Image (cartoon, rainbow, N blue to C red):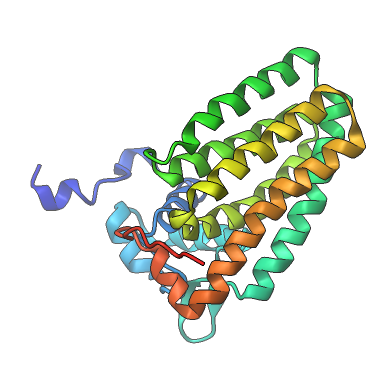
Length: 247
């Protein structure tokens, strides 16, 4: 098959991709920087690239819009959202409240084996704070911890709500590609304090600890947004170079 056709055949015709499959692809595209905040997403371009018709692409865009990653602009179509500093502050406030609930439920519902496993995962995450390793690896591991904590809280309703909000914040964490060593070390300690509180079955301590995890990330993300202003969206591109922001 010619190279030009190979690049288009993401979904063979026989597979009849559903709108949710295309939506998942678009979400990955946004997360990985194919589309940056403010970029338009054209139905025909997506259809051509994925080798599908425009109908399921249109449905997929509606799914991604409901999740908050894109918006529909009159006369212009779909584009990736540009979150303001206030938007990000609000998302962190909401996440703090949701994750406090997750921590409470995990204390109440997780088994001892699950909490021990969580503690082991936290220690595995600690290794990613090595300055020689990419900070994105540490961030991915941290979000993995959050997902695991949500799972052992055993509430599908809470998990669904948390998932939508945290996805937006995970996307914003791309700006942390310049996190310094002190920030990376402290991130590990916040997770360790949470694991300890969970193991002690101390609800109040666990809620404080998970809020410390949230606050540690929030302060860094908001600081970079405020320092760079609109230029922050350059950091969302696929070829972003490491920028050191020292204060």
